[in-house]
Length: 486
Image (cartoon, rainbow, N blue to C red; front, side):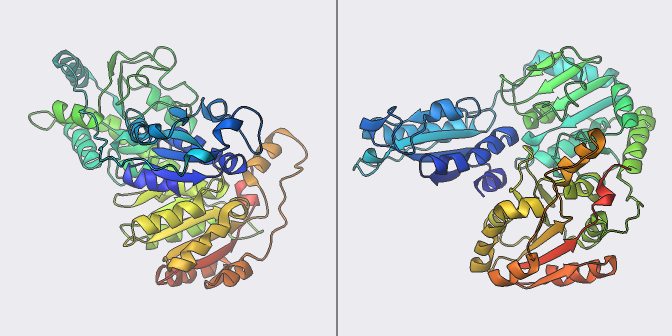
């Protein structure tokens, strides 16, 4: 929940846990915040100060445990440090690349009276690109015949999406989005040419490689976005690379940039806007070729199945019925693949999905989203395996009467792992699931529930669910065969 809230607000989600098992349970959230660049603060109740480093009951050294995935880990040793540490935690979690911070507070220091403070953590004034850098980038843009813009999560700020689209249209630069950042740029725009994810077709990547300028703006060029550091190629790209991200540690980290800019991309594109719109003719063929490849890849599949509902048909019907301000919260799993490939997001629609690939994200993310944005419709899609991890958290939606549509894709399998087993081995141990009656569970939680076992039931079930004034539940008896390799 805190990760989802941090993404929506760009302010730190705060988690408070007990020591040992409590902190261990929170470790997935810490890793997700680091992978997703989300501000998060974890406050852990620690053993008494006198027992530190004695392997006391439920003691963990949190600097050793979280030091490699957190921006800062601090253990309070004096009551007077509390305010200063909290103040620094807010700044550390939000400045540069947002991420997680951990504060460990021994239990004998937690009840001390201290004077209150009224400090405010103000964001730093963003760095601006130099005149020389702007001139160089502008020159590269003017000369490029096949430019490509890779847009990342840093555009998720007020005015960011609008500025990005205005820049792309003014310069006639095709845009692809980084891993699971589909809602950063309108997918219906002719200049949108796809996303860099886990299953880009070879023909698309071959065409991307033909670009003669890469503008990597607001992205860290992570493992998945860069196709395992092959696009742009590490350590030196085959084409000129402009890399802009508001953290000097990130710029040029994996791939040397011809122009590296440690500033926010919003300020960069505002400074680069041409005096008049660029003639689209020279780049029309390039943009059209990229767009046609994307459209072919994003076309709804026709594969048949005889062992259950093809979940991409559920996604297709949801796309047809989706409100303009839909919040679609996804867990991790194969059920989500049709969303990433075929759904198509146009802001203010939002995609809430973990870049870390953590199962168990969907249900709490949906609850947090409905609490934070009560006027927006929320749909949660989760696989049967992921639902069994955190599905119990939907009880809060019942308590608060949150209008969330919880949808479980039940194919009786950890299908992501099963796919690898099918490709590499003759057996598939440990991936079959023996599931409970999910609809009975939902009814027991106090929400209406129905089961889809035939594709003719999809449209009616979704229409009824989207009209509910409280939480509701749909179980989809999903085909496993359709997700497995042919």
